[in-house]
Length: 161
Image (cartoon, rainbow, N blue to C red; front, side, top):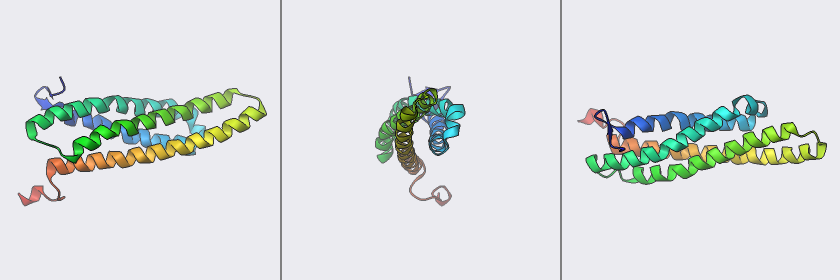
């Protein structure tokens, strides 16, 4: 099922969706965490991008396993790719919590609840930034190991042939 599409391996096709959407969601999460006024207009878009990328990750890993059967062991790349799902889930949960708490705080008019919400919102924003940075590091590690698995350990490996 996750082997080829129209004669092309599915893995590189799906991976490009993850490679585009997940960094956009990471950047968006950081931006809505540090700019509270952007949470309302852009928050759901950020959550949707994070969710779409997260849904694509199992497809990328399954298709990667199919590709691995054809081209050989991908080594560390496969292991790092499996771990990425957990980082992406943390990003989805933290960005969703941030957007939800912001909307909830805007509906409250009680000054005490507003103060509590601000403390909770600030804490959630910090957690969201930490989750985004961790996810970004993991995306880099997965991509770097995938490039090394496909092209070799040196940047100019293709020119050495």
